[in-house]
Length: 358
Image (cartoon, rainbow, N blue to C red; front, side, top):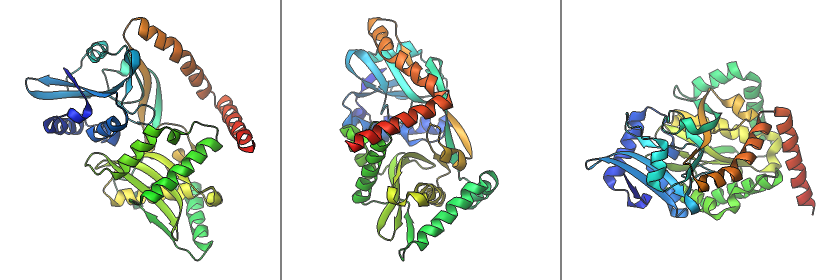
């Protein structure tokens, strides 16, 4: 095994990485492609890739970030929605041996891809990641919605029509908007939404903002940024930024203009995204982990992702466990109790309102 910076991967290694992803049979999630790892490396200097070789031929890859004191985490941890190693079938190194070779005391993950036998034993929680299958076309998907979520579909389409009657302006949708101004608008909406709901503003972290801007410009077979925008005339009223491969659109950052909230522009946007994705040859939209009513209404199925930490025995790992594990267990305790979780969200929203009134 050798350890390299993502930018040092050879053309042959990139080619093999892509081939292994295809052979794995897993959904072609763009977060698992080499282009995503390379983009993260541009804004996260601790990014590395462990490369397994047999002779001169690469047979496996493990992207990760290395922090101080050997504390490691999945590449893009905190924003990446699919994580893990990319290995030749049958290659199954011991998880602790991988950490030792990478100089890591721990390796944390929060969206480990299903079917990762090297690391799944370290998972302490699993989550549903709802998906929309449009492999048979948008018309077939809408027909499913009429059966599964008839009220949701009827109400959303009615709100779209009302939105069109609100003014003389046309409601239009752009699946792949290249205007950077539209991306800035989305990021501003999303930051305001984070603050409004009492949550940490991801875009206040420069590395995340820089990564999103970089990915918006990126065009690669396995990982391209896609900005989808719902317009009223020339005015954006809802937008979403995600990543696509040939067959998967990974949904990531959706938001909308609160002025139009009564028309549910975010829901209208998601229907148009499903339609646009199907027209672009995409077969699966991955909505990402996390419970949400709109996801339950839109989904046709679910994938599974996992959260946990691989630990090598030692002082550094023990200190990390003491610092991280108790808070994580508290979060898990609250998450498993819907009434308690609802009170927590209400408290966050109340705090956000108080901050806004100061």
